[in-house]
Length: 263
Ligand code: IPE
Ligand code: IPE
Ligand code: MG
Image 1 (spheres, rainbow, N blue to C red):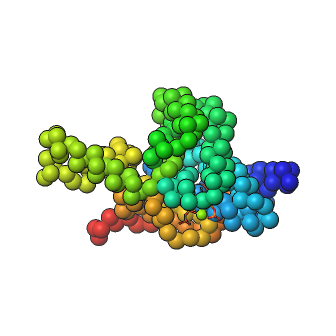
Image 2: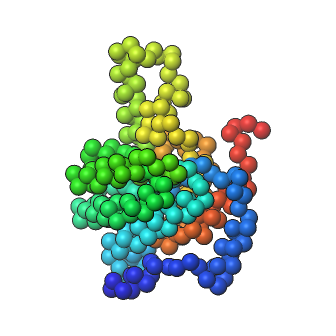
Image 3: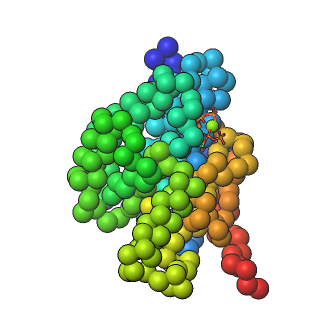
């Protein structure tokens, strides 16, 4: 089974028609108008596994290859921030076995990839209620954060035990404490105050949100930050998602007119 799966996910650079399509898309990309911040809901691993008659675990494992490819592509295209939704505050509802698989894959990814991430100038930045993650995950994250802390090319926000509502609740609590101790006054509180206390503090909001796998929902992702983000959607399942899809999304993003409520 491992050989079959290895063949399925080790897709090399597309050849033939797909290679030609990629070339056409690359010719369309305007390198001067790249999104600064891309957010991705890495969804569809379970369906991918099911379609291949495999247990869900293999879908998650295959999904790691997509993450590798997309991080590499973002770094080649000089994207400044990539936020990937890896585990939501609601994903604890899944069977314990599946939660364990997801956590183990994350730990494996971090130890295996950290050298290459550093070589590409990627700064690993976990976001979410990290203190509730298992100790071995926290340890791996601490290692990755420490080793990549001076990197400046691409910030990789790993959304783990992440929930948009929890993020806002935590920000509100912190601000309320500051009001209580007198360091912030109520009329000083504005959009920027809220943004400042979110996990993404100091970062620009995502320009582009990608949801693969066909579902049209936000699933509690970056609720505050997505206010004016351009949404790109595909039925391609995350384990099949490769640079060609990311580039399609960027090309379409560049053709959109962002008005931010203006004319
Ligand atoms: C995304 O794939 C991975 C996580 C949510 C952690 P899913 O496991 O949600 O895959 P589907 O949606 O069941 O296909
Ligand atoms: C969103 O996917 C969370 C992640 C990709 C980590 P889900 O599969 O959990 O979302 P729903 O349940 O389809 O909304
Ligand atoms: Mg899902």
